[in-house]
Length: 393
Image (tube, rainbow, N blue to C red; front, side, top):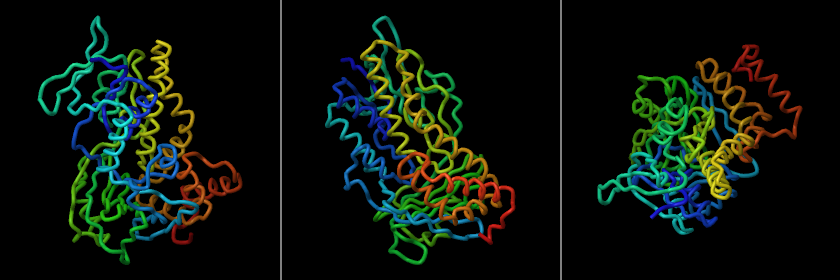
């Protein structure tokens, strides 16, 4: 049996690509490594819920406030106006996306990707089947590599795929306590403190009956489990029951190229599409899966492999500037605790709060209020140059 497209990976990106292709009548299969749960805060914006038709049953919490905590433990609460941040549990959310793809006609294969082979008959995906332990060889016209930040497809098939920079994320899913002075089931806490993460941040994200507590770093030698234990202690969560522990790499920037010009295109973390500064990945992974599916359909319709480039072009045309701005923020403010202190101070500003969440909810920079942008730019420079003392903001 052969397929038009085989998708390697069954996370949000791969499952979305498989679902879109199946709904379009493409003969598609996806390969999933059963049982893997990616560490993730689980935040999804309203635009994702709308664009990808996510049912209410998958939303385990609705966040109304984001709390930014500085190295000196000063907290800034940012209300989320005109909406909410949805929270999902990746254990159930990813499986929902996979099951939906199957219900729309995609074939699900469970096992471990091994390699791509090519011969006179065409392109073949080779994987080790979980049930039998045997190597299975499946013919296909195209491959979508959606197999994560350390993508084996990217490493072997796409130039630069072996050089993606990343941070390591680790979190613990815990049984959530009742609401108290330090924990609010409708509030996400983001901790900018070098003692927790010297170059990224820590988080406490409610998941209804559970909560995700974790951190990320790109610096070797940091004890992620100890940092998370320290974060749980500081947040009053040390005594909560631990449900599971997970760790994985998170890419830091989109790859310059997403395809091999022949029969492979990348999507999601494999293509490096996690937002700088925030580390947000679910929305961008699903968009990556959608544009990869669009590119695959274009190749199948025209027979022109050059159409694989559509995937990156579509994604970057809409999101390049957001990624550029977020990268600048991370480079400017994550370097030291003194800078992180100033960043949290900047978050006091109402214009910063409104524009930040307008951009988050709608996934685009907001240009409707030029004077607000001008004020923010001036305040940003003032903070970076040290003209403003954090405690006076």
